[in-house]
Image 1 (cartoon, rainbow, N blue to C red):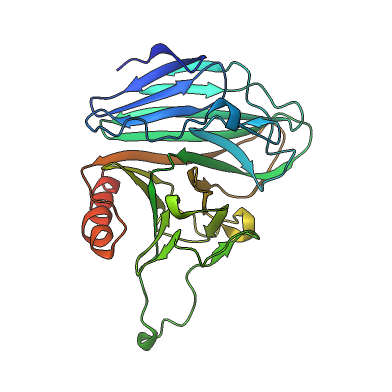
Image 2: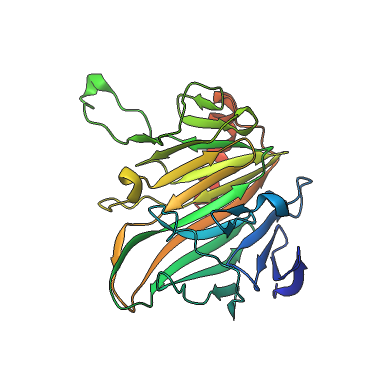
Length: 304
């Protein structure tokens, strides 16, 4: 389906759709994906849309939706504004968007959104160094989801100590403000649950290794994003390939690319795959996660 022009909260935008899914991407600011919904469900837009008076952080308009940053987080370098019109290129299955070069960093952010199937979105994030010297950073893809969601992050399969599984397979990284005692966190056998409504303050954890996907359930619709962990790659933030944040007002599912020294004129890419699965139960129990969500995600991953 060819993208069609629209307006989203005062910004010029495009609608991209299949018979099953619909996205709204802005073209006068960004690059941003501001809306993602199932055309069959009743949940509406699963992405957070921030009120105008809650959008600004360190001078940066958060807006909501899905965005691209560069990691590690820095109060100046990371929070460069994305308020200017984009260069737009239409593709056979979607659209490519690129912003003007950031004057203070020399980096140019780009995002290519493609719909290769009725139930699948491919999002390719790019960082190009348009400056005069190498810059070390990593692509950082952040999806802001509604506060009425329940997030889950799967854990790697369990080993067997008696069989000689003596070495660790991943690390969990807390931030300085993270408190693991509140019920916002549920540490299940095969997953970590994030109950957004129970977060009374900012909370964040990262994982150095995991199955590559995470999900957020909202009113019977389950958003899933997938970015495989690349072995042998150095990731930022003590090695995190995935991070999740909540403060009770938003759930962020964040994937990261490799920490790379980008030479002048070179570009690094980071790819995510998205879907929405309809009709699954809230994955806050072992039965719902193990018997419903995980098998449904596994079936979808086989289509990629």
